[in-house]
Length: 424
Image (cartoon, rainbow, N blue to C red; front, side, top):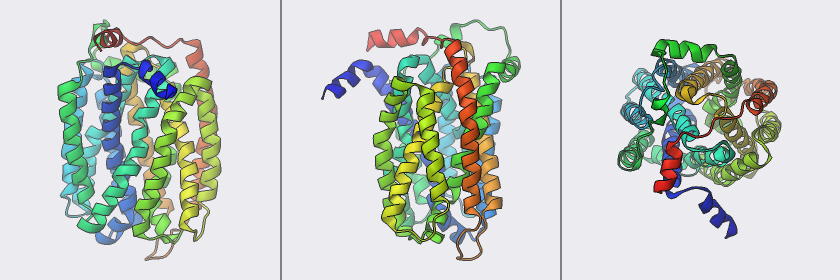
């Protein structure tokens, strides 16, 4: 009870609303990407495509999102963040609707490109808003709630999506996302206030100069380099997660919703707790703990044979706790890297690099993993070794960034945060 009261005192009502809006946005965007993984086994059969072609569908979103991030970076700090968010969220809804009516592989591939062009920029805008409105001391828990959408998409989205797909076809989960996204969009229009304080910071740079300057800043380059490896883990293992569970672990399509549901519930519980922990013991310390746990579990999980469902659930829960700790702490730490006038551009470029790196990882995964007929996936352990190596290297890179942030005191939230608090 005391914890609840303390939590209420930490944020104003409007700030809680903003956190909720951003979390729901993340929920729909992440679900749009994640739902492809559990649908993978179904799509391979119904569309009669190879693992390489499926890898292309996954990477198409990532590559187009990466391109969009770079194209948007120069303009990201030139507009009201609310208007920018609504523009790209509308495009994301249109792209997802195209996925819901895709009749074949080619149409689906094009639909994923459209979705990526808009959806890939949304996270960067959301993170810029978090940085604008919240102090560094509480960003860990803010990111904990926002990134909880990752787990929520498993708890509510993926199981429901799988049930819909099993009963009404693989198109239906995308239609569900469209409906949920429209509701979120309406809430943004009605309740979110303009976020324009960053526009008052004078800048003589045109969009191209702004882009070049942000890319070439040494402190920012370190963050971008770390992001390249941060993206490797999820994008390499996730696309073939359901196919691996069914073909190698001996599970059934009907068991997958329960596995995702259970894993997601625990991830939702530990997400906010991880955010608070990162605020208490430090972002990097939390990242270190999550990485060590993640490396251990990836090594175990990717080398399993036929495994009982309860054991798969247990391993998945621990694995996602580690992944959640890495995501939340790394996201919170990255928000402290850019200056106020560069936040939008930095986040867009960072998101772009993440998506492109993830696209390369998904493409490579499709080339490494091989499946012949209904035989088990081959070479899946190799993906695990690649992910573990990237996690280990990233530990060193994030350590350097952590020291950089400690030297350069993070900029305080812009004045709008104070105005919002007063009004709320």
